[in-house]
Amino acid sequence: MNRNTLVDLKGISKSFRIADGRPRKVLDNVDFKLAENEIVALLGKSGSGKSTLLRIVAGLIPADSGSASYRGNPIHGPAAGISMVFQSFALFPWLTVQQNVELGLEAQGVGPEDRAQRAEAMLELIGLAGFGGALPRELSGGMRQRVGIARALVTNPDVLLMDEAFSALDVMTGETLRDEILELWADQRIPTKGMLIVSHNIEEAVMMADRIVILASDPGRIRCQYAVSLERPRDADTADLRQMVDEVYALMT
Ligand code: ADP
Ligand code: MG
Image 1 (cartoon, rainbow, N blue to C red):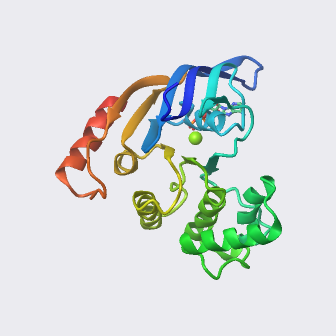
Image 2: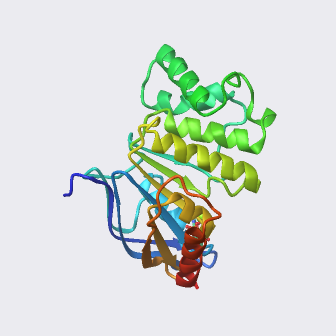
């Protein structure tokens, strides 16, 4: 195995039973690798299996066939080096911001003092210093997603998975948060070695990713890949970026 491979999916297939009880194939024989130092965006129409693929990598659901591995070890259940950020934030409403962030560490058996310290440091890094005692409902959507991101990053994951992490936010808030994460990544202020993001927003994918993987629907399989050959930080208003967005759009339709 290549030393620099973080996630390796081989021949992944997955079906779900729909209302009438018949299985419907959502992913069909998907091969995919995420390497170190890479941000990959998974693009595809609604229902093409993007979230399903991400949940398999996160160890939240098993594939029906094929193999999924993280640094050469089979994925069966959530792995210590992989964290996920959800579109709907998935915070526990009855827990404070601090408690929500500490959860990931608790699951890993980190002691209370260490937990508190690491959660506080992460909240500060992600722009939530002083909000540890707040409840999620007291925060705006953008700040709630900051909590979701802090909870994912506090365990120092190698691999960060983001499923439509910005699409529940208004455009400005989403873009600000996206750019902040890219800055943390570029400055290596987070230890994350690779990111796999899901989006249905082509511009977001081109802004973030080094490589775009396009899923075709029914059943979801990889239609093609596209390399984004732009330096970071990227400016959404450049002709190069606009042209890439058009090219990816053409590949998707
Ligand atoms: P995407 O994220 O690309 O929109 P999903 O991976 O969420 O697509 O879903 C792909 C298909 O699988 C959809 O048709 C969805 O309804 C179906 N599906 C996803 N999860 C389940 C589930 N737990 N049970 C039944 N069907 C599911
Ligand atoms: Mg989805």
